[in-house]
Picture 1 (spheres, rainbow, N blue to C red):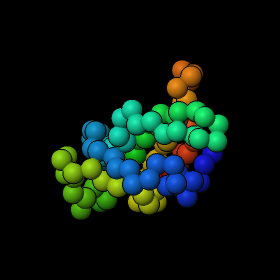
Picture 2 (spheres, one colour):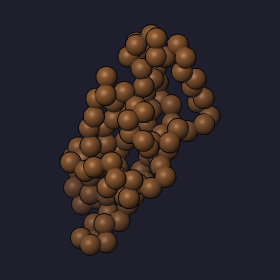
Picture 3 (tube, one colour):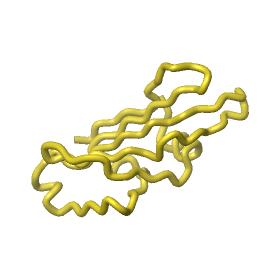
Picture 4 (cartoon, rainbow, N blue to C red):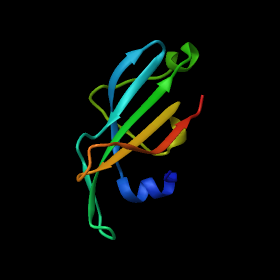
Length: 103
């Protein structure tokens, strides 16, 4: 698993966009199909980012969603849950590199 600092270094100033709402939770997704080059190993990775905010009606009552304005991914602690997966372009399987549930 990667740390938040390592992810910041790899992903940079990445944003997530509103995807859907379900049972007191707002779900966001990261920028699709963004490739990152690991120069040390000469491998290209694709990252899949999913975040969640809410799970409690008191939390979402005060939360404003703008579907036209992506939210910054960092700091990760602002999200109720975060899952970040990656796969290298030579393989088909995804590996989880960060997962947190802050609820």
